[in-house]
Each structure stands twice: as C-alpha cells, then as structure tokens.
Length: 456
Image 1 (spheres, rainbow, N blue to C red):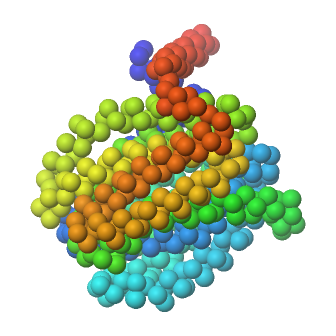
Image 2: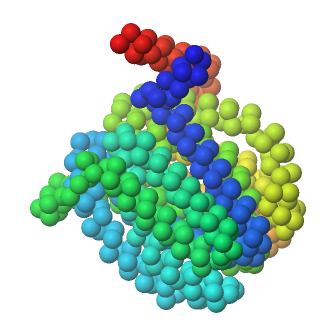
C-alpha cells in the first residue's frame, strides 16, 4: 500500500511531484554518466580520459555560446501566450545556420586550440564538434518546448536517454574490444541523433511544422528576440562561468589533469541533483505569477534545497573521496581536496541559481547578468592566481569563491530590487511543515484516486 501511495504521489501533476520526478531523473542521469565515466577512465586511463573530455567539451561550450538566449526566451514567451509551434520554428530557423557556421569555424581552429593533444584526438574533435553543435542546439530547443508545455516527462527523457544510450554504446564497444576515442565519439553522435528523433515524435502535436508566414510573424519574432537578447548575456556569462575552468585546464594544465578533473567534477555534481530539478521546474511554474508568489516560492525552494544538501554533503563527500581511486583507478587517486571544494561549490552555486529564477520569472534577467559579470570577473582572476600555485585544488577553490559571490549578490539584489527582507529569504520556520503538508495532501489524493480505480 505504501509503495502504491508513494508512486501515486510521484505521478501527480503538482510542483512537488514534478520536482521529485525530475530529481529522480537527475539521479539516474548522474548514475549513468558515472558508469560511463568509470568505463572510459578504466580503459583509456587518465590521459585518454582527458582527451575524450576535451573532445566532448567543445560542442557543449560552443552551442551554449551561440544559443542567444532563445531556449529560455521560448519558455518565457510561450508561458505568456505565444504560439509554441511558430516560436520554436522561428528559433530553429535562426539557430541552425548559426550552428553550421560555428562548426565550420571550430573545425578550422581546433588544431590551434588543442595543440597539446594527439593528432587522433584533434581529428575526432573536429568531426564531433562540427556535427554535435547543431544537435546540441536542437536538444536545447526541444527541451525548452517541453518545459514550456509542462511536458516534464519528455524533458526528463531527453536528458535521461542520452547518457543511457551512450552507456549502452560504450559497453558494446568494450565487449568487442573496440573502445577507442574515435569510436566513442561516433557513439555519442549516434545516440544524440536517436534521442532527438524520439523527442520530436513525442512532441509532434505541439511542434509539428509551422508555415513560413507564421514562422516569420513579427508578433512572434519581436518578443522572442527581445527577451532572448536580454537573457543572452546571463546565459553567456553562465556558460563562461560554468566552462571557464575547462578552458583554464586546456590552457595551463595537461590532458591527464583534464581527465582527473572531469571525473571529480562529475562526481561533485551529485549534490546538485535536487537543486537543478527545482530550478528546471520552478522557472516555468512561476513565470507570470505575482511578485509575492514568485518571491515566496523561490525563497522556500532555496531554503529547503540548501538544508537537504548541506545535511547530505559531509557523509557523501567522505564516501566519494574513498571511492575515487578504488573505482576509477590509481591514476585518479589523490584529488580529494579538489573534490571536497567542488562538492561545496556545487551546493552554493545551485542555491544561487534557484534565487536567479526569481529575476528571470519577473522579467528582470539583467540583474542576473550583473551578478554573473561580477562573479565571473572575480573567479577568472582567482583562476590565474590559485591554479598555477595549487593545480586542480586551486581551480576548485576559485570556483567556490565565485559561488559565494553569486549567492551574496543574489540575496542582496532581492532585498534591494523587490523590497524583500533578509529574514523572508533566509528564514522559514514553516518550511518543513509546508513540505510535510504537501506530501500528505499528495498521498491523500493518490489514495482517493486508487480507491476510485478499485471501485471502478
């Protein structure tokens, strides 16, 4: 009975059930990514793992740079009544040629960008980057379309099936003794293409084909580009903030360092499972609501997520640090300090992004942009101070300092711009009661639905 009730609670349509399902998807994604990382680390070693990580880095980085805020703008505009089909088609008509041009430029410049890497890795990076950039932009647009319509099942499936199919492909390569860097990149390309096709089928009623007249309607294009241009700065700086550590490793450290860092960084992201789910769900849910509703929802989500993650961080860090060398191999042991710092940074940074959703939901992405500029400038400066002295540990320390800066600016901005007291953001005596009440009400609804089904 308990299992049936909890399952019914998770099948609900409320925010809490959606966050729970998205958190569960995040956990599975993390597990699948970790299994794939273990496999490639064991078979390729630290240096080979670093070369593969560098190859996979470029398309994700460049696609984020050339998205121009359109996926976020799509969610915002559709939630405010814009037609999804025409809005998505217009965004795709802009981003597709841009992605092809970006891939061609990357093909020409990657030999200079990766001059410390092997010729085989550079050739694989050129092919993978040119083909994966348009795929990454398509995935981002489809995911945004699913979020805008509350199709979080599709949204979570997109994010889940990519690492699942990747893992299956890597295991098959390993079984036949053909797991090499070029073969792995082909698996990543094929699985992404399959997931895009499946997502388009699932969203065929919402997306379909828009007419050229509807696609280039000024009433669709103007608001989409207007909000996109305002939020693009935030997205751009968020990308630079999230990826500049890899650029520093590419510039200052070795492929072996990149391999070790890719492992400990991915493991540290396990503390962002709940927070990233909250951010994904809260923004489309609160967009268009009153200021009071937005502030109350975001503040409560921030407090609860920080409480849960801080309770979990110490035991999880201790367990994770002991498993790194044992599971991934001796090449990856000895990075405990960097792992600890990255784990704490993940929690602080995740909390700051939850707070940022309040500004985006109320049409004030400019404040998030200012926050990102200040934090990015400080973090980049600290990268060049700490990394030469302390290596990967210094890199992680710089990221942690930047996360604290982002959180402090977010809290101060909410107080100044929205006239919100610090206590209403940081203190919530009724939070746990709210959480318990929501869980109880969800169980009651599930029990009632189950009773009706049995009667029928």
